[in-house]
Structures are given as structure tokens and as C-alpha cells.
Length: 303
Image (cartoon, rainbow, N blue to C red; front, side):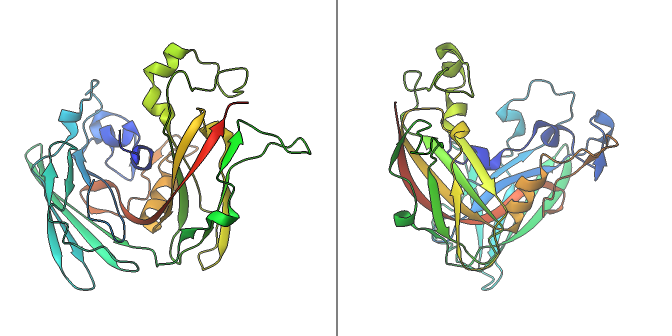
């Protein structure tokens, strides 16, 4: 499973019945849509751009094969230099990528993604533009608590200690995310009740959804959009295993920030549904964004 799994979560009702700006969840409002899921990173090749489709709600048993669009035309353009690159479908990952790795992603630069695909006999087009955050974001490891802690360790005042990450902010980064990957995840390393106050699972339950427990993500959009330092703490709720963790911290652009802050706040008090903020023009939903990433490691010890 890709470590970005939770960064690209799109709720089922968006995939199955998204059409009008206000929709009721039924087949009447179904319109075919291109579903875009992808992030680009400065200094890294373009890869992992998922292009799929939505389906009417009557499709009860969704499979990946039903959603994948393997023959879409996917073009990315640097809007400063006008250099373009046509992405290629990778059948192994079921995503689009730059096979030559010759398209450079740069800080503080805008990129346009154009997708053309045929769905249900209709020619659809979707366009999205992202501006990569300015250079400046990085984790300040010497000012962070990232070595090791016992699970829910307490200090001399009996307060629970947490892993914390301090970082330099980047201009025009709207949201900061922490994606945790439990490198030693197993039924034998899971933190069971009563040590774990958030779960009463049995080993069989953990084994069934091991990948879901292995990866977790938390984020905040409460920081100033200007240079300076900020700090985030890792909630113990998101750490389900003893052992080593890889944590990737992302400084995300406006597109991804708006998406994650609105995708689960789509129902009005009157029961109607509003679309999340997609920043996609044409016949598309989802998110095409950009981010700067930095990686650190820490370890959860068994008491």
C-alpha cells in the first residue's frame, strides 16, 4: 500500500454520485466525472497521478478495474516555461507518471494538469492548476522530540509526553500534514487494551485491517502563511504499534489544503450535500496539488 494512501482518500459518495453543486445521493443526479488524485513535489519526478471515474450509486460492488481509466490523455505543463509532458499509464500502480523523468518540478512555480477521457461514451475534459509552495519548509530535528518515547510516557508532572516536530514554514503552504508509517507493524507489536485506551481489538481484528492501522495521517491549517517556525504534536491515538515509525511531513498547497478541509464537511443542516472545494475545471472532481516533503523517524517503546 502506498504511504500516501490517506492523503488521497476520497469518500465513497463522491466517487459514486457527484454531479451538481448540491446533490442528493441517488442515481438521478449521477453524471460521469473524471476523478483526479495526485500530488507533485519539487525535485521529484511526476508519478502516482491517479485518473479514475465515478460510478452511479447502483453499483454496489465497486472494484478497482471498474474505476481505472487506463487510456486517458494526461498532460502536465509548466506555466512559466510552457514546457509540457505527456504522462504514461503504469499498469502496475494503475497511475500515470513521467517515464523519462525529464520534467522538472520547481518551487514557487505553477503547473497545469489537463486530462481527457471517454466515460460512458462521452468525451470529458478536466483541468487543474497548482502552485508549488516556496522553498523554505524543513524539519528542525534538533528542536523536535523525535528519538523515542515509551507508549503514553508521562513526565515528572504526570502529564503525557508526545512526539513533536518543529519546522520552518513555507510561504504559500496552506496546510501541514504528518503521515506516519509503522515500520514494524504486526499483530505482535500492536498496542492492545488496557495499555491502549483507544482500542479493544483482538489480534484477529488487527490482522484483518493491518494496513489501515499501519498508516495514519493528521494535519493542521492553523499556521501563519509566512516564514517562521511552528510545531505539531503526534497524538497517541494515531500510533497503534510499538517499534519504528517513518513520518513524512508535508507543506501542502492551497488545492490540497482546501480539499482535505472540506471533503468531510459537505452536508448542510438542511440535509443537502455541497461539493468539496476541488479546484478542478470541467468534468472533474478530486484533487491535483503540490507539496514539499521532509522525512524523519522515531520509535515507540514498550513500557
